[in-house]
Image (cartoon, rainbow, N blue to C red):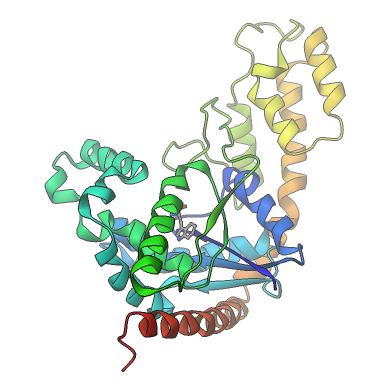
Length: 335
Ligand code: TRP
């Protein structure tokens, strides 16, 4: 029996290099591992918890995200790529599970807590900005996971409290209604957080430091030219410390075959930052080019993308129906 791997991603924007090196690369490996059955959910209902007032944005990003994911090399023959909102069983499970978790426990969830704080800073008034749907999204995420018997959940460490909450819901369900659901385990990415070229610990859309997979050559040029280097290096031939330089960090990420030379020349003061940035721009474009090509292909074949999503959704729905049948039987609501 194959193990079920499941993860989700919110359709709120294009994928950037932080996604790629933090998660995508790992997904590409997992899809090729024969011991796993891989479900990848485009979590549009979850995106709506924050963006219920902008449905057009979410809809557009469902397709953007799907084409981005296909463009980095996710293979629909190996990964079930599906849209959360098209699986009504997830919504049903969410309702059933909502009795198994207290409001106090939800408010204690560290991820929810942090996000409430952010909302407060943004909107001022907690009471008016924190919806029932938002506070309850860990319950909905537990439904995402258990609907497909998710066993291993590849995520970044910010998601650990949500997996823990899902495990609690599963245990409670099983103890009340009889053993029905599987307890998932997180599968932490080896590189969960990718630094921004601006030196920030994290690359993120909201931090304004993201390099998108769809960025064109001119944009890449501009962004790399602004990258933070060793601040003590003033002149072109000053020796510098590559370990605190974002340009070097990205040479490493992109796997520049020339990496040792970059490092040695930098340390000896034999390489100016402008030259080094130009080399990174070339390498980054070489890395992005095949992704851009595929993206162009899918952007001009939207019907193919829709078909892939439809097939993935049909398959996922089959599995979710099996789960809901078991769940309703256990809860004695199988009329
Ligand atoms: N909450 C996740 C995020 O914001 C996305 C997500 C939705 C997810 N459903 C999931 C992750 C199920 C893992 C499992 O990144």
